[in-house]
Amino acid sequence: MDREIRLKRLHFRAHHRGVKEADLLIGGFFDAHARNWSEDEIVLFEDLMEEQDVDIMAWAMGIEPAPDRYAGTLMEAMKLLNYVHIPR
Image (cartoon, rainbow, N blue to C red):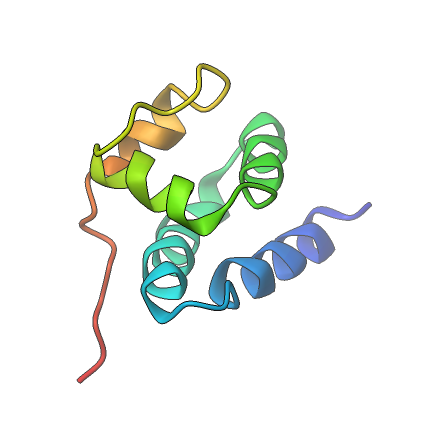
């Protein structure tokens, strides 16, 4: 599948999680980082989108340790939380 189509699908999934807080965290992370991802990072984020929002948020906030398959640069960048922009 074409990279741009995959990123468009991931954009939608990242921004439409069903809970506003997850939309802001996961969607904000996608917006800040996706354009620079390698193929492996896209695959990893696709896998991450299959996880539960509460788990992703707990891993990003450091409340729970991320599973080994997500540990690494992607999750470390997600833990910074400097990409979350709360609309006023």
